[in-house]
Length: 166
Image (tube, rainbow, N blue to C red; front, side):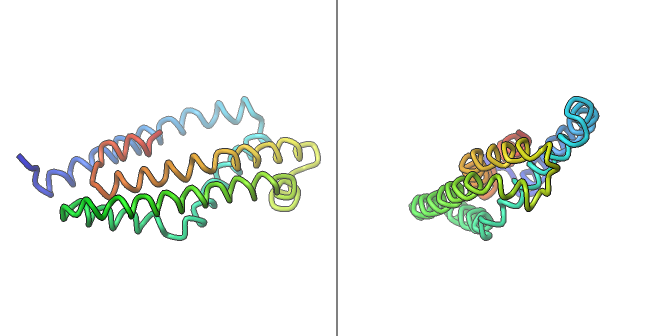
């Protein structure tokens, strides 16, 4: 028996609230531990890492919204044959963006540490290492964003929220 739209929306909201609440609770308790363990300067670099990761979203050029929209449309109307070409093209574009972010970010990690982060001389090596780590994780991050968009488009909200909470 197919569940009603209202039932699915309620369960999606419920899963979203649980996932967001769990993430907020972890951050609430982890932040003081991170600041104490890393020190304020290194914690600043840690925050810079997450900020840089969010800036990488700009290079998706809105493609993730298109993946959500068209996967929802094709999945909802039963046009499953149209999903394959869409997914292959979008995944290839995401992989290309991730590999570009890897190459540019890794090659420019020292420049980013010095000019963008304006890291103190004592932290330049750490900042460059951090930008290198963000660059190295970029392809995986882009594939993760693609997978989350597909799950969202197919209204697999419990799985989507579990993946996003990770």
